[in-house]
Length: 105
Length: 445
Image (cartoon, rainbow over all chains, first blue to last red; front, side, top):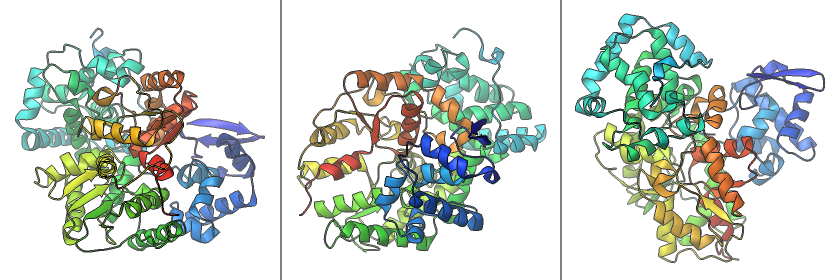
């Protein structure tokens, strides 16, 4: 466990760099993860993925299948990976403030 | 071996599964469970191992934990057994909840069950078996890291490791069929085709997040003209974290479901994707847990499958991959199955420049993610990254020789090496062998 300070905000993160308390999520966190993940430019599409992940997580308590993410954002799989090179389970979930998914990821 | 392991202090890492599990223990319950496991499930094998070890220390130098932690004997394989089973056997189960708490963290997060040490032991003592026996005790005592227990629970509820529902699985296959058909006309992912030659099986994370791996496999199957199918029912997931928590009953249920699915579809063999631990489960531990000495349906790992396709000339290479590559040999399919030469044959078929890492083949160092260690989740991430400095050195040496890409044909190796490459700033790309085959193969225009 560590605390990260970024643009005047504090975030508690686990060793994989995911927020440990979903309530701490904010737009500053999105910007922080953008830098960490080596994403060149933050677009509306990144924000849409974050929004969809959060809505699904708040309702179901788990990250959605990438298929569901694709349906709800109308993005192809390849494009999701272009937006988040480390993938939906790592980069996108991290940016959205979700916990690190369990399993072989 | 120097300082006795017991004199060196090790700090517990906070984990709700381990902490709360240990808090519920009583000495009476510990003794009862331990003796049940030792008396009813171990037998001569454990006794011979415990009695035979002469503490020569040859296993120490074989272990990446030991080497990466400045040769701290706490991490020597014999030291790990000393801190767990030897003590338990010697004291006939009369150990404290604190002892179990430490033993649990050790057996789940400080050994990858990679069996490298077993190769250097003059008696061939299988330390992985000892650690698994310790995990079995911890499972029965309910002292298990939270993340991996969640995964085992998913297996139990859904028969896959990522909480994937039946309709989501089918929907994902249809979706990838559609996306792949845009590239290859009329491509199908044949569902439930009775009597097909091959049933293709994958692990949970593929449909959940990495569906492109299913896409790529479908393209390879299609171009090679393989008569294949995928099941529409649970049983499609070949993975098995229950094997690694010590839930042997669940491990048996999973493998029964997997093999019975193949039997229902009347396929000749099961081909599985690039996963290591799942191979251990279908070829060694899981099948044997339900009484099949060998898999009841022929099991072909992706490495062997690719080899067969290239040997038969069913896949042709348009232009070889031009970045210099190295190959990481995963424990479960190399030490566990001897596929190293087949892997090299395929790598040389598809890549221009292949540079070996040293040591390699069955002597390769572990990724430090396998054996369920990465599945124990974020609390133990730093420990496994620090405990694999030798892997970073090994990769850095290949980089000096010009390597830009590391091929790791196993999901857990992928996860572990990704963290190693990132933490030690090695600046290498990581790929599955299938990624490269898909990229360089001839496809219909």
